[in-house]
Image (cartoon, rainbow, N blue to C red):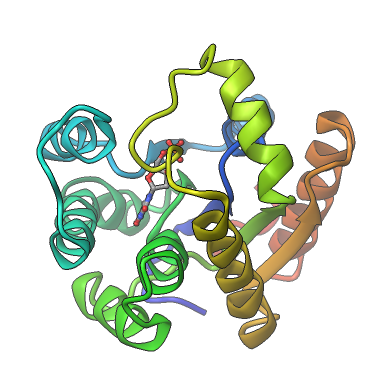
Length: 221
Ligand code: TMP
């Protein structure tokens, strides 16, 4: 299913304010309570290099970043995260849960910035050596609502990406949905307007069915 060794790799995606981080935390708690060996990561970030790049990339008052430079910076942070954390974890049979991965580059830089989703998708696969999440939970939401949620959460102090116009975030959403349409076996699209408990339950059921379907290498654990 993926070039992921014997572990299992899932990622969460969505527009700003879609509730990904809540779902990641909830899923990690649930998996750990069931005895799984879980590694949770976020993108950009998860390594010292990645966290420093995250600060640069999200800083509203930081240096100008041209679209291709932005893409390459996200990809560099990702390459480091794969080499340092994700690939070793999967090789050790661990379960990796990511708060965003390359699908975000396709949506934000490929779609939002207009760099081209196909080209960005190819670069993504190249940079990770073909390692992709086996399951992507796409929390789908109208970006207008998501941005309002994000503004509330940050008391109006939006970061560099959150401050992009609504039209940018609409292209991001469309690009995510198109990826899900193109790869229905890898993506599960969930309506992020549902309650967080309801969403958590749907995600657990899906993951359980993937495990018992024997695709994970950790079936029955
Ligand atoms: P988040 O932690 O709120 O998801 O912040 C990450 C931000 O970076 C979010 O605005 C999406 C953006 N992003 C990209 O533009 N490209 C990428 O490849 C990734 C991973 C994130």
